[in-house]
Image 1: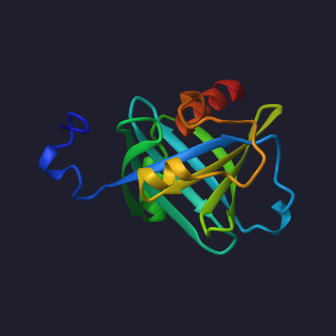
Image 2: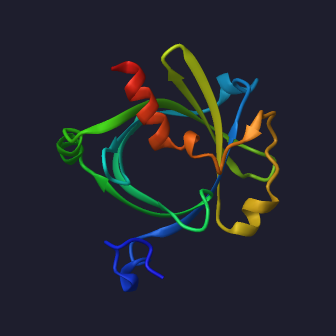
Length: 174
């Protein structure tokens, strides 16, 4: 089965991996937020593509990446391919038309050493808190219980993926 028309079936997994992810809408920041490490993330979702340009800064190091994500069986399972860029390469891609989203991602480990990314996004006058957890298998994804209070799981809701949030934010800020 071809993942996308532009990806030859024989090459689909040569430079890519499967990502399983669950997302949860949080009522606000967790109590331990001030003690957690974080990164500043700026995403450019290139218009009319499924490509994301990302810049991150953790207070010491900067990274620039170009990624393509495609939904597989569900919103929770994605095909992902990423390349790392130099700042010069990033600056060239950043000139393309894109929806922009800036967020701060905090990192928390739960009692099973599962990494939880907690995204803080400010959209116009509203704050959005999302927890994202990545898994190495579908079995782990299905068995997982988030150790934080949450309003609801939004893994299958397209309105909470990065592209849609960036599109909404871009329309609010224009």
